Length: 273
Image (cartoon, rainbow, N blue to C red):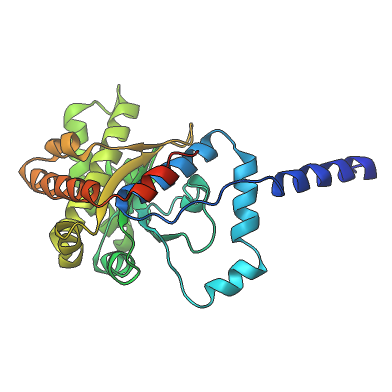
């Protein structure tokens, strides 16, 4: 068991961390600022910035914060990602309660129910950023790339949505000799196709992108490094063909509109790490 002196020393260290002066994160003014805040939080996570992490927890997960959240929620980003237990957006992006609106489904694919949740986030909660987040070593994508026993109807519905990305990746890489590259490429293609599905099926999302009120980003989370890597939709969507080119154009329009909406205040506050 820990000696009393050791426990007392640990308590003092934790208290010192929690009382350090760490600047509050500004609420993002637009999609670009929201993306920068997510990436800044990911850098804290990757480098093990416990001062920032524990301060965030102290500020955002306590009785006062919980009481304030009973009156409503005002997240700054909507994220659709995988159900995988190793992928937890609040932890990956160093955020607490009420900051990000999350939809989780195996393989980060979308159906009408998931689309409804996405539309709630971007239209009713007014999040200026929608992030589609795939991840390294996704089990659903792996399953879609291999032949196996007949899955249950529910799992089959998920795999059906991933099959085209899996097939395209296997056209480029050998599963036997280039498994890691094949899987990673399929994960990226699948995330990009999810963006395409959203833009094809959701009039709400398309309208908000056209109006410059919504920025859509696609990224991959790497389990080994902890890093979230932005996928350049301009280049990557070319991999998907003519349907993808349309999504790329919409995404580029969103990026351009968002640049014009950035405020000086947001630019200044976002320079701090």
